[in-house]
Image (cartoon, rainbow, N blue to C red):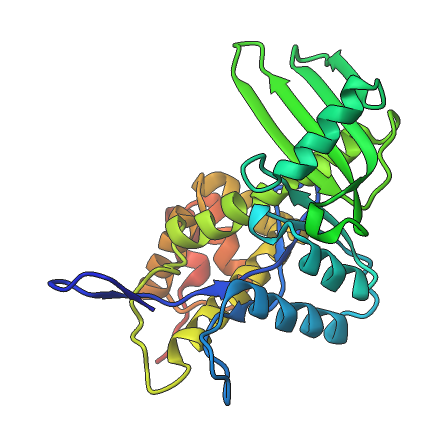
Length: 295
């Protein structure tokens, strides 16, 4: 796509990413991203919604065993998207802003006046105050009154007074027993920004690097390769104690990649184990281990 600037035009590519996330786990497992590009024989430009249709079809085909709860931002929080998600028997949690869901908020407020909305709050052992307001079975909007969702409003206040608020709709029936679990699942959506895109942009993966447009799909292929490398690293981070130790010693992934590149520049590396050991114990100690006689 082209940013409108007559003097200095800038071009960029878009893709729709999907990751497996779990509350309390920093690591994420990306699935194959879906490029947002005009399709062959299509008369209109592509968009996030049509890319989502292809993404869900691909996930259902490639991972039929997965029972997913799909986490969306406000852009997708509408009747057609909910119908699409439910057609694959997936559950959903979607951000629902007041600016784009006026009728939903009006319905909830009317139910609240009639004392049909549940309020719940508590303070945890770390001093964080949590406040909930929820109700089940309200129409998503006036255009799709037949689509009933469960509404969850949440406020968190830290011991220092920092306030976080958000509102979601879901097909998961909300109770006092599971409201905290639903909230934690909803907030896990931000891992797609923090642990995925932020990592890919700032921690040495260079996702925003200009690799060139190519004749057809070069930029998309490079982005897919970047996500593949990221997936491998996330599996290592989850399951490999040596990788975890090397990352801890390096302090950041960017520093870890820099150290790995430096070792490749100076030594012949015999194995991945030797490489991570060198990062962990220090290059001066690993010099003798990594040198290989090539004469």
